[in-house]
Length: 392
Ligand SMILES: *Cc1c(COP(=O)(O)O)cnc(C)c1O
Image (cartoon, helix red, strand yellow):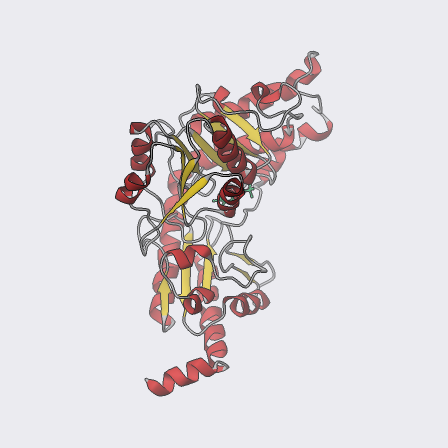
């Protein structure tokens, strides 16, 4: 195998050649600043407008409700900090979940230091939040609910429409981190009752460093970047025209192929899950069996240390992850796996494999074979495993 087998599509994705082609004229040819008046800049402005329309249409929004950002993290930061500031007079209580991306969790921690109170909702053993618990958590001073559409580690899809309905009923702003879901599963801002939604291009075969925050018309939150009048004066800075064009193209392709890609990935994912659970002893699947992102598989293997598994997989040309890209390098087990109730030891032995429609059955077969060998070898070196086997 010369090319790596790339099974880390929740961390980032390959930029489609069509996307590169769409972007390339906007570097050296149509390089004009879309805010300029002369007609030469009109090319860039038109392309930005087109991308904005595609992105808006994909979630049932209006183009003027899309605000470009430098990615998902910026969109999450903006939504939460700006809502906190805008509603600070009404109250200082924010509700989120224990399994959010760090872009949400660390923003909430920052606000906590500024005097806000945060409630972190528990999730059940599959990673779903409980609507009754959400309702009980609401107080007169609750100003924002932020719950992700789908989890980046275990792929669980949250009951967003119901959460949105609860938020609406109580007149509380609702933000969803839709980065993993956007372009992968259908989303509609009205059906979901969301006021703000974060998305990012590089999770849907677009370029890195470009995303958007959807802000429902009428929601009054402050500007994120102060400066020029770009993005209706809410996010200043010369627009990243090639990035925006690439995001638009990637979204166009993602929406056009959503059904067939999801069907293909789901089949391949289920094949992977079945083989792993059947062939590797003491393995478990984390997250929901059905209500999960099409490409997501997340396992735990007892008596295995996730990092060693990843290193050995890498030597065999397989790219996987044990949690999120942001936690690698730290020895703490994933906060998501702890939140679904796994003990520390088990959470340490996790492996996330996230597929794309470009992966093949042959790649999955090879991966399962290599994984089986690696786990056997690592367990062979583990004194805990030896003790366990003696007891059995
Ligand atoms: C990747 C990701 C982000 C961060 O997006 P960037 O564009 O990399 O900043 C936020 N939330 C979730 C759920 C993600 O998967």
